[in-house]
Image (cartoon, rainbow, N blue to C red; front, side, top):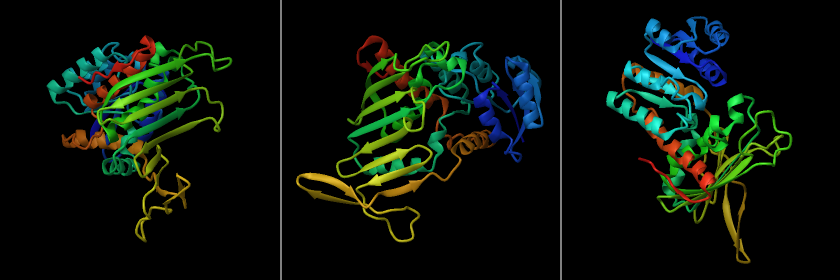
Length: 355
């Protein structure tokens, strides 16, 4: 059994706890740490085991865990260098995205991990959705010319999200999932150009100091171009959207993360397949249009549960090869998102530094 601790007992910590309590065959939950003791104590009650702490080094000293989940706000990464302390002790860890808001700190942690050859994982859970295999197969089989990405939602109810200095803004704290997915299925970005805007949201909550929305153009090493539209102004489901479209010369794929993938322009699949629908392309009067729907693939896994389990099994076996987002790779996604913020600040295109 792996002895597991959690640092950070807020909302995302609770998300991981809901998975950890299901792994009774694999883990023993021994410690929970939060600056607010009552929150750590609440996790002890929910877990039915472990001890509450307000000092993470005291917890590590006493419990000597085999693995740690780091679930703290973006601005807190680097304060006390939790990750570097874990590396120095040789403790594998899972950390939520963004791994930090500072590339210098992220690279320092990355290099320390590499020196210890330590198993790590980062919370890009979407990589574990079964739909990702479908998207990857499509992008490998079809040359992608353009990508259109939309992430429109509301304002999360946590204090640090309201301040761009504390969370990095929506493109860093939330839309980072979509940017990471573009890297995962279409290769590395070369440069970005971003605009941001404020003043669209009427009567924002107290302490609101972030962008209402932004728009970004990306050039990829493959030659593909992408547009990314993201905003936190939605007040109802009619305004919200979460979609990625991959366009090739004779077809397209619409990816709705954690829901479905629709492929237009491809022939119907063989009888007996679990893929629904048919698709054809017809032309007339110099135009093209789709008919008879699309090939539809459905999300069928709890990708968050699978992501956490994959990390823990890697720690147990000592083999991290099945982890789809180790720390070093997540630093490259962070560089992508922070380049967007730099472009917003400077008003100029920015080369993405993936070193």
